[in-house]
Amino acid sequence: MKTIPAILFFILMTVTGDAQSIIKGKVVNAATGAGIPGSSIFITNTSKGTVSDGNGFFQLENVPAGKHELVISSVGYTTATYSFSDAQLPLQLKVELIVKVKELGNVVVEQSVEEGWDKWGKTFMDNFVGTTAEAAQCRIRNEQKIRFRYYKKSNRVVAYCDEPIILENKALGYTISYQLENFEVNFRDRSTFFLGYSLFEPISTSNSKKQQKWIDKRQEIYTGSVMHFMRSLYANRLAEEGFEVRHMTRVPNEEKQRIRKIKGLSTHYAVSNGVTVMTGAGNNDTAITHPPDSVSYYRAVLRQPDIIERIGIDLLTADSLIIERKDNVSFLYFPDYIYVTVKSKREAAEYLLTQYPKRAATYQRSFVVLLNDKIISIDKNGNYYDPQDFFTSGYWGWSEKMANTLPLDYEPQK
Image (cartoon, rainbow, N blue to C red; front, side):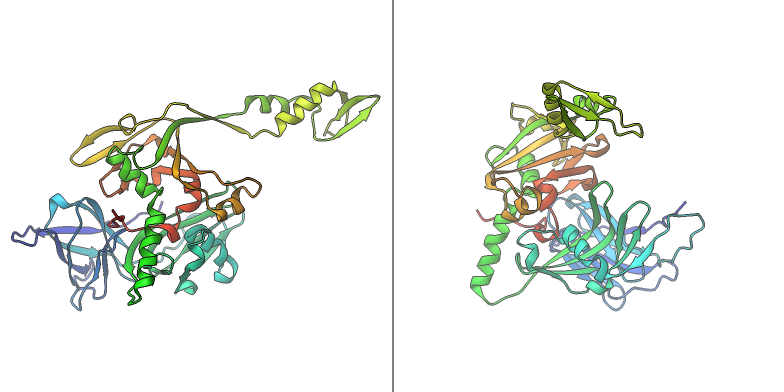
């Protein structure tokens, strides 16, 4: 079994004075105690970050309110994280980073092959950056540093990178440094999962028109996003912000399962004396006759989806989804699924092209399930924990990639 070494944090002291929203500290090698220069220290999913000096010391100022996760990383060391809230500020920390050790396999694992960007680059871009119009204006500066491992038996690909991925987003005006911890595309169950820590740095420009274009585009992306939804939920303003939420269940199509079990039923049809004959798929290929109206019904049912979605009529309020509010944190819980409609925005052409090429655009609609039946905590910035337990599909499943991600300290225009 893989053992993950502990990352040690020491709260050295709590300082007093005027500078309350500040974090100071030192990053050291856990084994030697020597300072680690050039370490990256940032609050994940924000634009707040800094770098340690030649002796490993750092200072992070103007820490935003709310609950956050401080990330400390350096090439060759295991990434460290530290959860805190603004109520704990100011902080002074000593962070001990542990050297990464290349593990030797001591158990039989699934065989895989290591491949590069030429083979899996497009797959990575589509699933990490996205396929939105904004994604077309993004590029990864150090793409050749990303490596891939393909597992043929389970039909999945895993990506990893020893240094932060540098993503330049010219659509929103950000350079994102992303510390990738996990990335996997499972082709068998058609799912994508990635996890990491991101630092946003606004791109500098003296062009006022370009700056205004970025401001407008950020506002457009924010409207209807998961961040917008979480902030609206926290503030009890779902309807005012353009969201409609309904309860939804997903159940197996039992009638389709029943039809599939009918003896001799297959997709082969023939007509004999006005009666449709459905031939068996077995070796004996026994011919079984069914009335024409039954055959039409069978074929109609077999074209139905395997899962039936039932969406409630009544709109859910924030108070029906938030089960508790405590210490500036709201706790979200719901059974089954919720069906979220954004009434102020239509589906993008790129979404229809890749998902539903034969129908016209309608409101953006997404489905959400709480994995493992876990409660989600939300703060006023729209930050929610644990993000791995908030699983989206539909429009959000397509749009919520890195090309359309905003930092948590983003503030929309009034």
